[in-house]
Length: 119
Ligand SMILES: [Zn+2]
Image 1: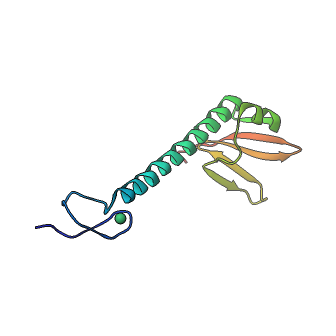
Image 2: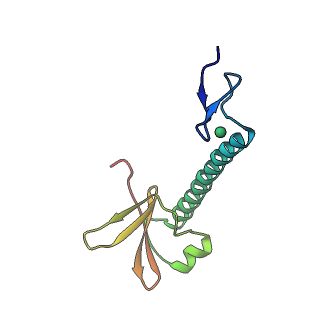
């Protein structure tokens, strides 16, 4: 006998074969579109973070490098993407992409820093 199942998209009862997951074709495509676009979104963010990280790694040669904002922008750094923020007691805000971070120094200069992730 058929067990009653709920549509993954709208929650209505699915009638028919037991392997059916959706009540209609439109529900199936709506569900798949959402899943795909969120995967795409994740990949896009991952790409941005990786790119930022490789830019910072290549510019931060000795672990502490002072650099002008123009240079960072020219290399393609996207200031909207970072993995975490570290705020000091003096209310300075470091932004990190994994182990590579930057701190605004004022006058469009930045200090690039490297963090030990194991600690
Ligand atoms: Zn449905």
